[in-house]
Length: 187
Image (cartoon, rainbow, N blue to C red; front, side, top):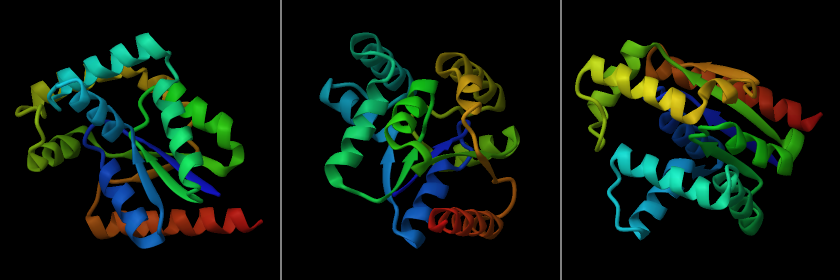
């Protein structure tokens, strides 16, 4: 079993990395954001950042900090998937719960890119609630850093994927990393 947990600041390229690994290497994807959007939809809420953050906060208050991590573990166990990429880890319990369940079979990767690059990528994806100016972007990022305790999640990072270059460069970085993981799993 190989589980990859992905973290990264907004616009860093987590979805791009997840989709590439899933498409090329056969990993199944589970996104924390997808889970939150499903819950928000069931509550009649929009998929804007404010409603999604509110949904997360309310679920964590009602069911505990590890609620979303537990949902991820449950899904992996129910499906029997052997190669999984968990996208969008935000707070320490989102790492701790699956890490406790899967131990050495889980590695945590940081997708990293400079703020200016991340902002430009966010503008081009045109997602509901994404900032339109760099100042809005920095405010939103600072709010999320506080809300999600990103610093607490960083201590779990085992490898970093640089996403400051071209898509081809990113793919080469990912390919090298996946080959390393697969070799490590054979030992």
